[in-house]
Image (cartoon, rainbow, N blue to C red; front, side, top):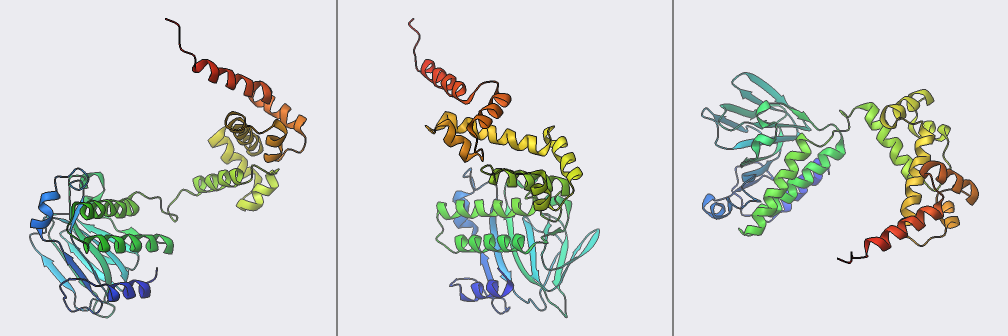
Length: 314
């Protein structure tokens, strides 16, 4: 979702918002007397919004609160540039960056004169604010376009909920969306900050799982990951204490156990599903891994199932 799409959405929303003069702006203020009956609901009191909005190209936008606010304020810059002044720091907020102003903190924020910011924002309260690093005064950078697209989509869903009827259901929904926004900003692993080794290992495991029906070599894995054989080997030793192809066979045998336990497939059919054309070779590999043949494994599982259903005669 780009800023053109975002602007189109807000320009075409039907709403009851108060206008402040920014073209395409939306401002949602929730009357406290309408939300008050619901704030003690266990799904709402944890986090709930009090105001929300979108200010596109907000020329001359300026806020100065010497006493701070009773709510936390989340600002997400989607375009342009803005400034946030706090008692001990001054921050430039660029596109793709998010900042939360702690409740009660003196602050001033305003748009750049030459390139005024476009911001999505909301004020919020709740009992669970301490579970998020909201008082750390850190700028969060959403580098990847997909991260920004997801965040903007959540804001749109939040505005849709807040523009609906003042019902318990809508406030519950809005509260959950607010939690999703905060967790997406502060806790979701960011592609650009993820540990490279963990990312490579995760990618390798997903590749192996997607190819359980094939015969994969270490060369195939190096080609897919574009990493050296020695590096991949080190990764697997660290995370699995096994060599890559040894672990791949382990995954195949685990899947074979699921087939034996949960389906009526013949051993030969299971072998074929796992990339083994020779059922005898598959059976040897299974016995080496599990200590028994596939048929013995299935018979034992079936026996356990029968005895589990028997009631003691007491």
